[in-house]
Length: 203
Length: 203
DNA sequence: CACGATACGGAACGCTGTTCCGAAACGCAA
DNA sequence: TTGCGTTTCGGAACAGCGTTCCGTATCGTG
Image (tube, rainbow over all chains, first blue to last red; front, side, top):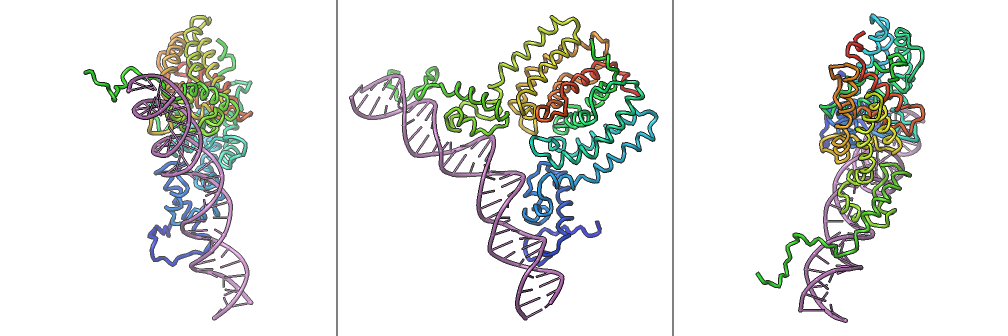
């Protein structure tokens, strides 16, 4: 923070080349800035350029694109995860806590353009991004879900925490780019369905 | 007037002077086959190779990738659209009809690998694929939704047909590639939430 | 001062969707 | 039949992506 180092002029610089740590921080700040302006899908070269380094440097610090994204958003995901138990303790009912937490998650995903879309497991290889989100947030979501369901008295579990979390994430895809689409509304309705008594689904 | 006419206005005569237009049909069949094996995101070159033509030929018949996808699935989308009113007429209640139609839509999306993911408006340009799906299916979804809501007596509309349809489509993303994720279940739960009385959302 | 280790930048690779153009195949008229 | 215009064909070429690779510049140290 106290040493931002925003110099980007390509000429006349005899600056740190062999030092290990500076680039990493520059990269993270540059990536965060570019993600805000150009979305999470911004080209790698744009991030490297913003940081004033080559793509080779970027890839040594973050071997894959997903790991860079994880690094940029790690503390926000952490904050979201930690908000779960706190909301559960502070809210009047577990359902209120669950809804508040989910709203928090949705706002996080929607404000980072393209993050929800980049969250796909896609196929085959376990994406570092997908894995991190799942590992960190599924337990939190699960405990909130269990508490809310216990309150409602819904014994049967129609959908597990992983499915619900992935569903919420999917609902956020494209939300920022489409004014006609209200992801937050839909997510709350999904929660309503998840918490509804099982017999409610039969006509 | 009685000119020998080295210049012919291409008004009515659009006769194929070159090879017959067999290519278009070959392309559609090849694309359908490739989509089944390699998913909707299969490379354009693979489709062209399968059809035994060059990519130039493919792009003259289908100026963009999305239009090819639309052409391949047009009759299935049409069938899905036509199933809406039929289900509404044949089902015991509108909600049953809505749930059955949505299940149909989900099965269609999930079985075509990657179709749901390719459905994004993404950004900026109105995708031909997205437009076609929306134009054809939103009215159908809307009438089913209205009927089901009228039956339930839920006056307020928490989410319009476009939002619900897009939400359902989003929930199907990655469903085929992830055994732990049950899109169909989630979609039915979302419908439950959509049809639930408005006051149900407040804790 | 010299030498090895290492982080650096950016060219290069393989892949994508899309555009472009020379060449070939056909119908029609002379 | 022969020639010509028209239209389609095939695939090279272009632009952009994520990722890999390597010559080079700089640092820490003996």
